[in-house]
Picture 1 (tube, helix red, strand yellow):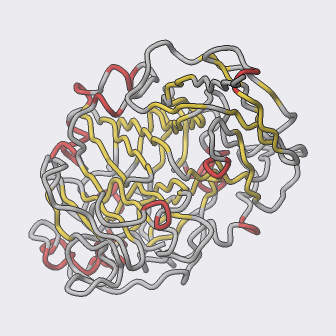
Picture 2 (cartoon, rainbow, N blue to C red):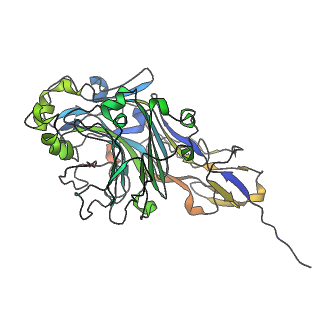
Length: 442
């Protein structure tokens, strides 16, 4: 007599689902307001949430978040008042979609950026991704990635942008120090004045084990799936910027925190101020111009319609700064599969204390039951790593996020006592002078 064992599998769509929504009601509470000295040596005074609110540099109106700089007063002390936001949550993989009504304009002396910074290690060992960046009168967007040795990108026509440098190592030979792998997109609607003139647009950044892709969509060309909240990068065509090539991206790009800032002068904008044909006639030095011309910076602000983070997995399981109780949900996946599929033979449930593997036969067809790990309490705590859920044959592929302290109110301290390796404290990373593509210190 022969016994025959049959293995049955199901196929589940690995679609992108919303895990974090930075909206006008919670935006400030999901960021730290960095107040240290600028790591890029800018002529800037980063201010706290309370100072930003009282001075009108941070506000919410018409369902938009305004993040600006001082455009009324002569600058003193460390420099012109501005805001640097650093997200409390961080994300190893996922899709970050930013919808802007306005970004800082192409203003002499300014250096705005929307970017991400790896947590847990000293820069550059956790990686950095520059999504939007420029200086002075620049009219089109610059994108870059910074790592230590061992990462390069391919220049094979896999993006709309033009490759400037291919080696992501900040100490790469035959490249400016700290330049990394950089690309430039010559579309004047992608940055600054041109971006604002067309009513803004969307930047979408996908971080995967195979690399990083960045798409820019002008206001009139935003894909329907992005607008509907069901993004599918497979439908978007050629990325604006693509960072892929010989590299262990999983190792080089750690979980990333999201950062908005506007600094002035410093190691990039300051060093090229005198060679900018628009800016150089305005003042002898960058600092002189920034200090004495406050009204020039009226357009140096972010107006955020939305910022959302999506990951592949169960919807509604979000990295959060406040947990109240464990929860278990059953998810039915959409009948239409995405291009990326996962075949399951077992489902592993992971909590803070236990891990249990169930045979797939114990589940209803096309469903699985993730369990969300939870933290209780509303007092500040040191950041911990919490495994949210797992639906995979490999327990090591669990979706891991950095948990953070609960925020009692948007106006309270931004937990500066434990920022440590999360935030880019002054002096954390080296920063040398160079011309050309500017990389964010910090």
